[in-house]
Length: 208
Image (cartoon, rainbow, N blue to C red):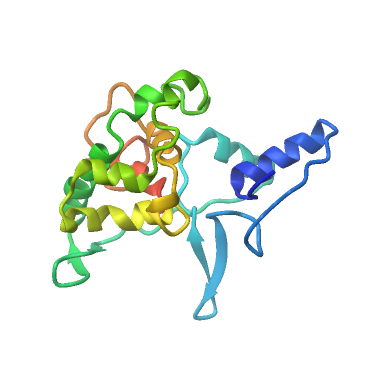
């Protein structure tokens, strides 16, 4: 088993249940993948994977299995995003409009490859079209300006292990598809409880 993030750890557990003895390989000095807790200013800080939703049944099932509690996060008042003059505050409405539109472009067509996101190989025949596509190459296809790309690069690099050049496009495309339904009403709040919305999708990428 290569990698002991969420999927790898669960797969290893299920293999043991079936009587197998998998060999586990993890590059980091810890398990958990993108999800881990660190300390800052003597306080525990969640470094990734802190936003979840009931629309993610595989995650919520494991939380219930191990009796892991959740808490409602604080709603932000503003967003700090890149600008030509450096990091700058933006309203949540600006973030929703601009970054939401960029993410829609980045993952346009992902539902075609993942009509059933919880069964990612349902259309394995179509996945061959993007199997070798990296996130970096997908960004290049969009031909975004430097300013627009800066609004995506933090998300894409973070979900690619640090660089979009070696992150597979298919993985975040699957996550994005899991937040989409056939009919999607306009969000009335950036932190509304019922998904999907631009915010729920962004949370899939660790972006508050």
